[in-house]
Figure (tube, rainbow over the protein chains, first blue to last red):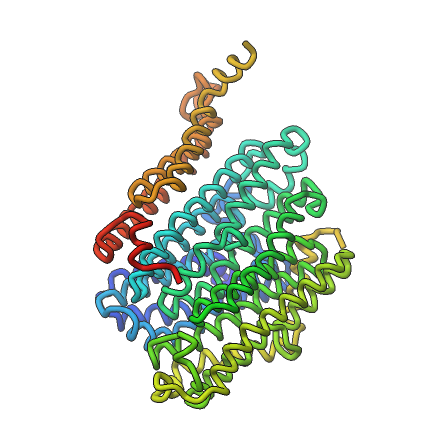
Length: 497
Length: 121
């Protein structure tokens, strides 16, 4: 048993990878589904054990193939990526019960087995990015998750999904290539690919080759900025999320961009923070300005959208702005807010997109005009939608409040008074777009499209309600999420306040 | 004279930057999806060169433990680029497959013409 425990970091990535291979041999959607369900349900157990170990016993270092780091690939799991692993695998497990009926409804029968294969590959890639401590290995996993994500998006029913996937492919590949250029420059000046090892060597390298290190920082920030949809590099996101199958949208909105943010934070503080004080670099200011722009511009666009899926996609861009804002503030409360919002936003957007998926399953549309009065027809689904929506605004009692509390505390601590007003102001915009949807859903007369809708079957409703419960529970009981986030922030910042 | 000397000494890097910028320009400037993918491929290829150039030492051999050889090239970047080439092939293959599907669905592979048929909301 203890032998098995020692292999957990590898199992976290290898099990879904082998699962994907197994599913690729399945012809029928049914077998494929049950293999994927089994794998997805196993993953939170593995990452839960890993996170627990990282909390009580400190970072886990796993040497792949028995090669000593920094020569071999190391899986380095501390509280920060333990939390990210937990989040990705929990969302992966929660969307699977939902997927059965939703996928059967939205995807052709002969493509269902391939859908689950691609889903498991995407899960492999996302877990791999979070688990690995090797910069180049992270690139390979980034591309595994992205390539499968392009396929998943292209499986959407609308033909516009194809163009959305193609554009995402172009921009995603440019982003990944920028990231590799950055890694190449770092390798040339430090001679290492292990993230921790680069961090320990970079101060010496920056003294000799300051321009190469700055160029690497620029390439990695822009490259990952494309992957995480940092404004104004977000243009691929709204169409991709709108036309993808419902399950894919919920899964990707909750996890894919978050993992790229994790990687950016890891590089900003674990690598470049070792050579410079991150706060004195112009890149911190640039991230701050772009984050604020995302919070406002994307929220304004969300207000004017008539398709709820699209509205929530723009809301995602706006919420990503909050997460990167904490990275730009770069002090302990700010970064805590950033990390805790990473997890909290996954819960909220997971619940919102799954609830919309249930609506699409019932009435085949997510247009605001078709949803008039649907709250009385699908009371449970829409209650979850409303509560998660309140979370986006930052209402006390939901997880959104906790994130914003820490972000505001961070802005205060940094003496950035303007940011405090901007965070509150952007929350008001969220109030407008969530409020508009809530008004249509609950207070309008039931329209013809919504008239025959009912709450979805339990297999679809259960994940939605579980996520809704998480939105409320972690909004009150913060010791788990915010407690771990605080430790992760302290870890990233080293000795800095 | 100094400038020419630097240029010749960094010949591979000049080519790398030329391919990098040229590839990226094609991706942005062209509407035809196949041409976009060609540009993307050139852009990715430039990175292969960026990794391989510093790894190669003139007169260096393959890294074999033998008393006869003392100067050898760094094998690690070569291995990394082998992986990157595989990723690049997969990306281009998927991009071309999507282009085929777009052609089936729209009857064109020009981005502007596709957008004319399905205007952005």
